Amino acid sequence: MWRPLLLLSLLLCNDLTIAKATESTQLIILPSQHGDRTCSAPDRNLNDKPIIGILTHPGVGTFDAPRDHSLSYYEKNVSYIAASYVKFAETGGARVIPLIYNEPQERLFQKLELVNGVIFTGGWAKEGLYFDIVQKIFGKVLEKNDAGEHFPVYAMCLGFEILSMIISQSRDILERFNSVYYASSLQFIENANIEGTLFQRFSPELLKKISTDCLVLQNHQFGISPDNFLANPSLSSFFSILTTSADKDGKTYVSTIRSKRYPVTAFQWHPEKNAFEWGSSEIPHSEDAIQVTQHAANYLVSEARKSLNRPSHEEVLSNLIYNYKLTYSGYKGSGNDEAYIFT
Ligand SMILES: *[C@@H]1O[C@H](CO)[C@@H](O)[C@H](O)[C@H]1NC(C)=O
Image 1 (cartoon, rainbow, N blue to C red):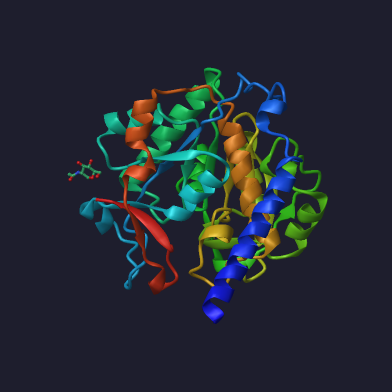
Image 2: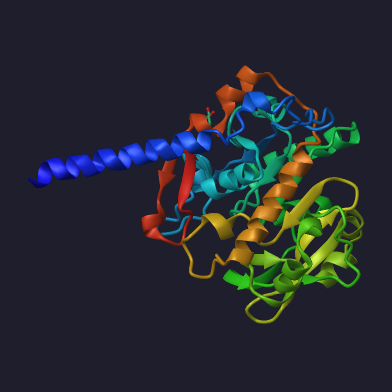
């Protein structure tokens, strides 16, 4: 006898639901009854579909043992982008086009014309073709800005180091620091003006926490001390120091810099890792740490929206990172969880 009963109760439930729905429908205002929509028109001075170009780095990015920092990767002609940089740009509301460093240069620089901002990633390559390409792209970015286009750059870790070498015109500007896989705080320079920088939209609480708590990941063996930075006229006239940090031995280095004239920000730390990399227990993942990643991403993309470069839709689609395969290598740990590998 239970079967018909169950069926009956199901029917009853359904009936009740329907009755309820009918009752409440009368209270719902249908879209057609709203009158005119009040969505504001897009700001014509901003580009709401910004594209970020990310330069690939030699190697495969998985740090297989033995970890290969050698120039043999140039011979192997393989390069990669850790997916965390791609997700970082996407977090801010942008799409990504990979700038493949070892592609024929004509093609590489055509792709630069499809983007509204550039990221130079972390890595180890400080010489050879990779260095030359960073230098050329950076030169073109400054030209774009000089010609009146707002075109931002984020340079992380190795990117910070290479921009310092380029601006100082010295290959010996870097010093040794002990900061491999090390979470740290950021100490703001006295009277640092954070207006118009990535820190502008941090809440007062987060600004305080980032200087007392270990909310950012450092992973580098090189860096520049504030004294050496300030003693170099080219560096100190091009960049303002925003923050410094201390390494495992308590030695202080410059950790965030911002160009005085161009929308160029360089980080010795890794704003992209907190939300997207899991290979080291040192990577901060707290809610505050994730906010640091999100604010940094939002700021880059808000700068890229000011670029008015609007390339053809088709050209953009056929060059987007979505045309490439993602490789998961998180099982090995200590590398990048996911990477795009270009062979
Ligand atoms: C090296 O790789 C790039 C990018 O995939 C490719 O365009 C280029 O033709 C390759 N060069 C050689 C010599 O194989």
